[in-house]
Length: 329
Image (cartoon, rainbow, N blue to C red; front, top):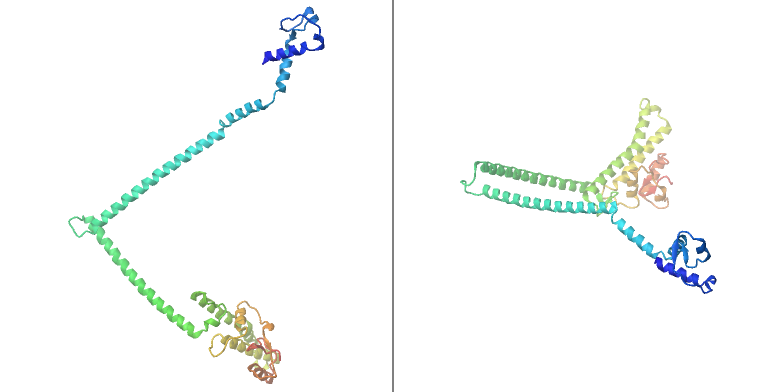
């Protein structure tokens, strides 16, 4: 390559204007310095620095693809010798070794389990054999202890069966009593797809909420009024008298409504179930759910209202009777 460049440069200089005159051909020499004679006639003579400059210029003009390929090859070679690849190979080797050891251990456990099962089977056959001459004294004691344990477990099992049977019969009896006392289907929270236990729990929850509502809203204020006047009952004020009568009538109306859930002769309708259920949350009566008292047609509510009017009882704390708002007189 070096000599080709030199020849190329020589031919270029031969074609230049300075070389248009015919001169005798001389051999090419490369020197470090030029003598005065060489300077006067130096067509075939090149400085070493000129040659190096020409080579460097040529290498700069060569495409970089070859150099890039060499660099890429070096990078690939370096990448395979990096610590990351080495660590990955080491990790892969350790994982493989771990799985091999785990498989061997698993096979050992399986073989030991099979052997243990075989030993248990042989001991069981020896213990249960009727030939007493084959059994040792230790095996005889083991057999007796095993038979005793079996008898104890059998007796305990029979005892549990009897206990469960008694509990089941008692549970059936309780269910029948509940069905005869409560109209379960009318209670808040009832659903055909609900379990019996959940229905019974919600029934008792309703019973508890009804008692709590009656005590807090009616009975407790009534007791407070009576206690406040018990030392001088003859001087009870008209206001307290009206309040006592209001609480007594309201309490009776509240329990009358509650009895619609309990007594078969009382048909459940309207929003009674919703109102009973709302007592557990402490909500009051929603007047929008009640009908106004109709004085043009006879009804139980009208008869009750007229009787209260004769006794001077006006608005009530619990104004509901047969879905009618007795305060709308």
